[in-house]
Image (cartoon, rainbow, N blue to C red; front, top):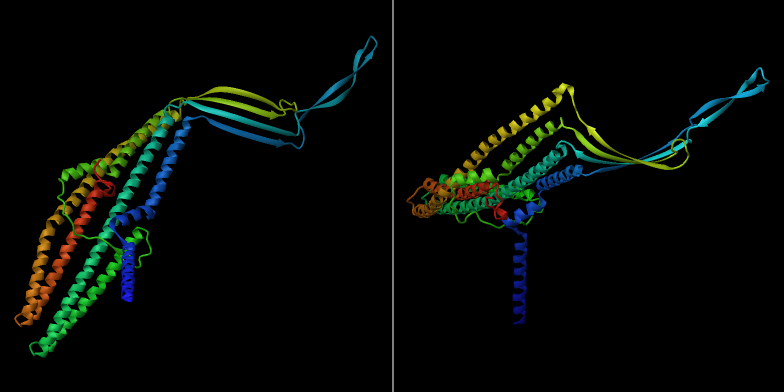
Length: 459
């Protein structure tokens, strides 16, 4: 009795371990998306680009504050610069001649020493730049917002691609099961045909034809299994998970069919929330600031400058001495290339502004077309699902009747094969429609710029 009890316990533990291991190796859609958001290389690149734009914004903001510069020089000369002087030698001769120059004495005066050290501390504070700094900061800020929207766009596209790849795996698994089912049906049909052949009701040629069909169904199964492996590899590469051995996917294409909103709801949501639209708006703001920057080139720049210099020697005296100075600097470009150069800059900036406006209109038209296409796919696939499901049930019933009639010799082999083909095609169409619905549902969410993993709603 105790041995039986121990055997039951061990068997239970083994089964629990198998179930636990199966759960660990199984991935749901949510887990795939979460893994992709952590590991996908493309999203990591977009994140680094976002960080770069953030630091560029900080860098631009720093131009508002004073700059402090420390410079130092050390020089050593082969010889000290000097001035040579000739001093006259005088002699006095009584009274008629007076003082008379009898010769000259040469002497030298050196300028400092052979070594000189100078250090300077300079402080510069911009006071007025005509809006150059302010507009540069605005541009950097808009660039950061564009990078944020690009990161959001990359993230939404990644989620869509993971959803599509996940559904492709589910569809491939279903096609494998359909192929297995078709092979089993064909195997049973082959066995019935052999039995009829033994009874003399079917010729050897008829058996041979069914045998060919059985081999073809086996080939279709192998092809379906290969497609499944490729679909899984694509999904695992997308989420950057290379260890695909013994990994399974948990999910279903079937589920509640939601009634879509009106087309205008999705169009307005896309025009309001799509990352590309927001990027285009920030591009327009950048182009406007470019015009202001070009105009600011004609305005004066005013800066406060302070210097403190500490050096040795100081004015030819071999000692350390410090001196400070302060000034206000005015830089006013009165005439630059007869004014033609900056006139061209302003006009060029205004044409860029016009380009961004035209590009935004073009972008909006393209997005409207994308949303309408996704909307039509969504509504069309939703309407097809119920009809395709009913078609599958009818095809299954027809196959049962056909097989029984064939067994009784009341139906030909060709009619049975046609019935089997009809069932396979009906099942393929049904699950393909479910797949199309899931993809259209995910695509329209992407097209309106909503991330469904974060409770995606139009903002």
